[in-house]
Amino acid sequence: MKMANFSNLKPSTTSISLRLSDSLLEGIRRQANQLDVPYQSLMKIWLTEKLGESASN
Image (cartoon, rainbow, N blue to C red; front, side, top):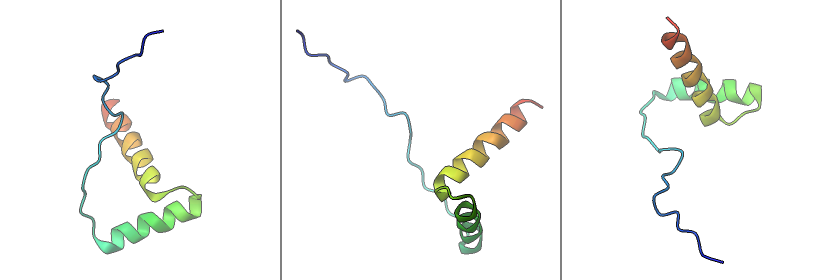
């Protein structure tokens, strides 16, 4: 057997910093809590949906 080398693989996600008002973040967290999903996951879902909408126009 030969050991595989995956040194060229890139992470599938990238971390970003995003400044939001406290009230906006609280609203997102509240909505995520109602839907029982992590708030960051909800934000990714919303961004993906919006991107899809704008791409289809």
